[in-house]
Length: 499
Image 1 (cartoon, rainbow, N blue to C red):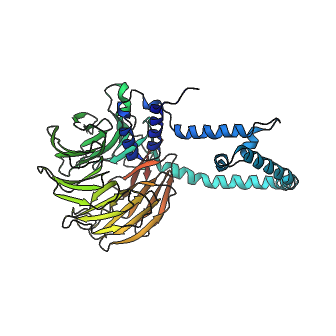
Image 2: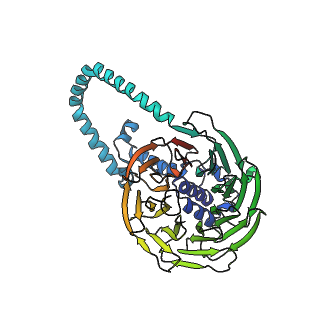
Image 3: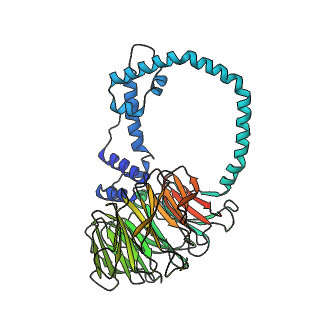
């Protein structure tokens, strides 16, 4: 048997973290393990490799359990054991369990035979009933299928997706070193075949493992798409797929990438602990900000020339282009800060952390305004509703949503400083949330492979879509009639939201 090297094991763990939705942890682990400098092609590690190794170990235990002198049917014996038994019991205990369950099966045989005879007499009626139920389900299944457009082409996990604010363009970024721009028709899903542009981040096939597309963002006009990648480079593309600029300054992967509203600056945050503001017109570095002591996890513009950064060092800095020191420092989190978002008016900053808290900050004071502690596990992301002052829905209440590894989404009334609703509908950590443009609905994507659509007012699920892979991101189009979701199974799905 070939030996398992530490380098191979590192790639296996890295892939498992990525597949499980722990993107930040995967990037940090990959950086510390030096995978970006490895000569090994990480894409040769098959999906689910770590799970396969564990399964192999369990299979060896199964084989050992069935080493006996008789002609035992091994497959039948395996069915009598629970996975937990295989891990917690020794061989003698497992044999005893198999023996006891076999004896019970023998005792139950006469009763089962009588029941089988009775079932056989009713079989024609049952078959007709099942056929009837299947026919009743077919129209519903056909309708659900017509509500979904599956976009295939990526050859690795799809980490990010974003709709253009203008037109019907959807961008996606993947571990296959490409971003793609899909043209989605205005009509119902599957009414047209989408066109696709492939934005290749490779100079050569040998460097593919260092070119994962980790972030992307459209400018406010929808004319330019920016992408950030694992090699530390940022790129700016026309909507036609033409590469305009390659921006190289970061030494490590870019985690967050954002345009300012005016569109003249692009902001990037990296694992190398720095943030960079780029002059888009010249394609040159405008200013680099080196205030953090740990990898950056998020960046967020407040206005056209000031922004906030968050990091694994538990700190938040508010910076301004042209200033060499932070204009504001927020401290209070006890663990890494995964996301930061300014409210629509730019007066309040929300942050969420692995310390299980959501905090609200104001530029008028140093300590947080609110410290929400109702989540029980790490909080991965937050989103403000597109409502209240400074939005197109000024008469609706401003809300903040937070998504956690405790499998809940919580809605906060920031004005009153209280929990408004706890949305319980997922079974696994929630990795992405997005409000509809009118603020009436919210989409949530989870590692349980489900996307839920919630009524914000009623705090209940109005629609659920089941996928076949963990969901990394969800996003609404500008009209609010389609939601896109990107998956670990290399697919992007577009769902029709005509509720």
